[in-house]
Length: 130
Image (cartoon, rainbow, N blue to C red):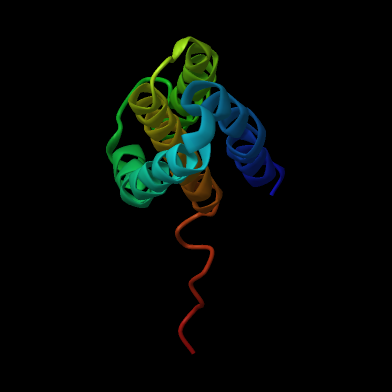
């Protein structure tokens, strides 16, 4: 459960603090509208990316492991994009970067959700016939 809290914190802190401050600097008086657009695009991206992330994690055959590959890629990619967000100067750049961050975190979360089910043996839930 701690990993889900980390995933939530990794998106909520930048969203509520950094993204709002950055858009206020870029968009000025239209910052509230820009924030609505950016978060709306990010929400739509997450809605699409979460099931796709689970599907990709199920079918990945990397040597590093099907789940660990997406957990690592999602986390590192999102961290790099958060750092790159400093260099955005237009609202559309922020919207694109935020959508990509949300997609990467969604892929990471989808892989983490399936990780618990992978730890249970397939025959563990079966009962013997009477």
